[in-house]
Amino acid sequence: MKILIPSEQPNMNGEISPSFGRAPFFLVYDIEQKAEEFIKNTAADNRGGAGIAAAQLVIDSGAQVLIVPRLGENAAEILATSNIIIKKSVSPAIKDTIRAFVNNELANLTSTHAGFHGAH
Amino acid sequence: MKIAVLSGKGGTGKTFVAVNLASAIAKSIYLDCDVEEPNGHLFFTPQNIEKEEIKIKIPFVLSTLCDGSRKCVNFCRFNALAYVDRKLMVFEELCHSCGGCLLVCPNEAIKEKEKTIGVIQDGISEGVRVISGFLNPGEVSGIPIVKGIFDKIKADNEPVIVDCPPGSACMVMESIKEADYCLLVAEPTTFGVHNLAMVQELVKVFRKPFSIIINKVSDDKNPAKTYCLEQKLPIIAEITYQEEIGRISSDGLILVREKPDYELLFAQIYKSVLKELKR
Image (cartoon, rainbow over all chains, first blue to last red; front, side, top):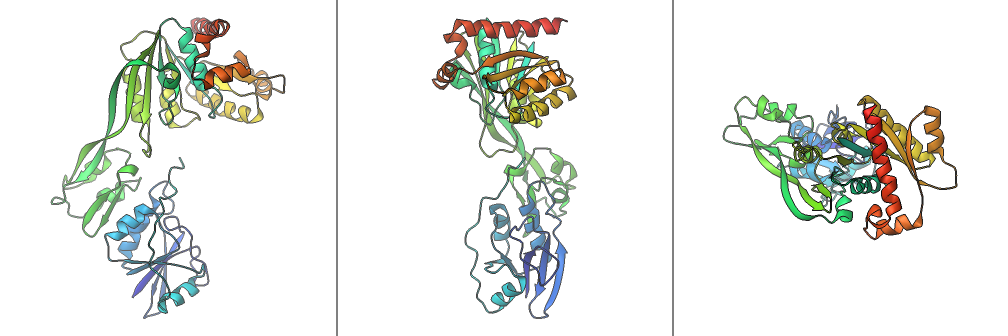
């Protein structure tokens, strides 16, 4: 099973990015193979609609689970049309988050925010 | 003849100047282009209002024709489109109505529909025709409304006073594009100087003749005046801070309709502008 986590650095010892759409990297982690792959979030540099472009990237990555501290409503609307399960992270550390997910300790993300748009 | 009233920040007195200037001219047209927060109409309380809805074009998909090429998704720089689960999703609030998705679609699967983004009200307040634009909350851009406002006066010859949005961004540019003259309203503060410098740069880019009104002047320091003198910028008027002006304005009244001495002041400003334009 592949999970996807927005990350601040392309590094397993790094931290989860608090922003989904504007996270610098996405970690795609294969639980069974213990294989990591960091992909650059090309959506991050967009002036607007980063969450939408990032959600498209997540879907295209083939990940089955997305783990985030929070999520904007546009991204959530897109992800809702897929079968991707969205979990809420608790710790900022990537390694702790993967461990918590494997131990089935993470709850589903149930609320979204209206986004931080309009800064133009 | 069109005079645009603008300033680098909100609260300097753009609407105050624009409303009073329009009212001091026997027969004039007042345009409220501050479509995100139009408030000139609160002072004019115009009668015989005609309303016009302003619509923009938004794409929609004929899903049977869409083959998932994603050309539109990749083209849209505003990320208003996503392709998920073999369906194209449109995020209307992000669309800038450029029409590009229609052009790049190889299958003509995208069509356009109309979406109302706001309204223009056109009414009369004594000798002033009052035209105000109202952008619906959450819309990306008020530009189509500003364009719609100017379309309404194409055939008219009366003097026009344009109440611009604050700042120096796209909507201000759209509002001053057709102006013959710009009045920059500034506060006598250091912050006021910074914002005055911004709009002054803008009107220079547009090569508009301009002068400055310093509003809310007191006995205290006046960095805006110092700046104007240093930069050799023309000051057309200084309006002294008076509690009475604040009270009349907060009662929703128009100063020049209440106080004849101020009617003289604003009529004088208008005359000075005309004189400068003739030179």
